[in-house]
Amino acid sequence: MFQANVFCDELTPPDWMDTGRTRPVNFLDIWRTPVNLGREDLEAMKGCMNEEELQKAERFHHHDDTIRYIIGRGFLRRLIGAYLNLEPKSVELSQNRYNKPLLASHHNFHFNISHAGDWVVFALSNYSTGIDIEPVDLSFAYQEVVPQFFEPSEIGYLAKSASPQRSFFKIWTRKEAFLKATGWGLSDQLNQYCFLDGRQAIPLPEAIEPGDWEVKSFIMDKKYYLSLAFPAAGLQPRFFNWEVLEIHPS
Image (cartoon, rainbow, N blue to C red; front, side, top):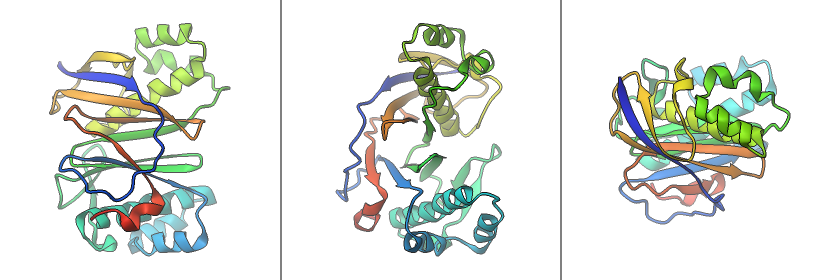
């Protein structure tokens, strides 16, 4: 059995006011875009997508799912194109054996996406990273979920929490973000992983590099929990609204 050391804590909600200052060599940039974009902006994002993606967008039964997919793929391609000085349509997206999206030709450039409710969020870094966002549903029956997915000390933490639903979504997004960062996706072993505040030793089914990780959480837009997972390599997350893409350095 392998192990990772993970330090979890909660951030003060960022103001998302970063602009186009010089990007550091080791970077972790978080972008967000609302789903209620105007028609012109959506058409611009569709213009970045390839034919296969456009056809997939048309197959969704619900309009909201179509919009989220267009933003998730179109804006992702615009971001990658801006960072790597590539034509967005030329970006070759692939996936690993666990279906984690990755770049076919740039192995040192990593990205991850999550969407929920009114937002789509993106994490980009030169290190493997994971991001997850969930709306805090105060009516959610978390008791039905925790025996299967939460570690015993996490269950005890929820039992003592003054707002157990909020605490549930904080821990849940941490689990998701970490597993997305490792590239394994959801796992049947989630109830063995403890993501409470502080330093945690987490058993893993296979080795990962590096062995030390950070998981940061915060409340976004007053009603969402967002968590990030990334290697403990001195990375300082920067937070961008989608509108500043054109002035962000490539």
